[in-house]
Amino acid sequence: MSGDRHFLDTNVLVYSFDLLDRRKADIAERLVTRALTSGLGVISYQVVQEFVNVGLKQFANPMTVAEVERYFFRVLLPLMKISSSAPLFLQALQLQSSSKLAWYDSLIIASALEGSCKVLYSEDLQHGQHFGDLVIENPFR
Image (cartoon, rainbow, N blue to C red; front, top):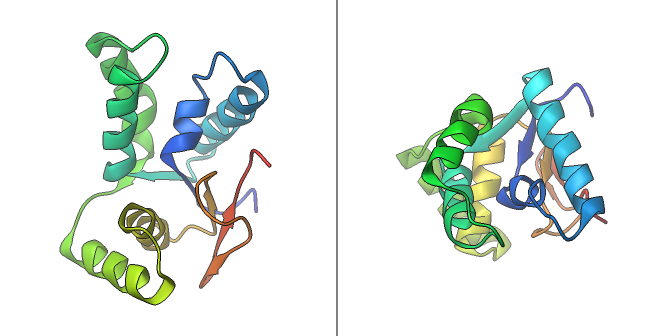
């Protein structure tokens, strides 16, 4: 699946900064680097919002605004291919209803589907679960 579009959930970006779990950080860094260099990586506006919130408030050493700005232009903006929209919102509502997902999870899955991704890398969703052609993969298993 290395030649397919793939979606990175917020936890992948967050783990790339993890100072305590080097294994997860290495995996996350490889995924982010591959997403950027291949041009096949996708994130959504939601992922950007969630990452910025965590980076500014919840990291052991919170990021400064300048650090977030640099990361935004270097990593987040090049990957951000899915913006909020009414069709995305409606698809997420349908997914939430049909799959009994949490709202933000359904929005992430809808974004990955809108981005024509084959893989959604996430620690927060059920590994191996399919949504059409999209498969959930927990890279930290």
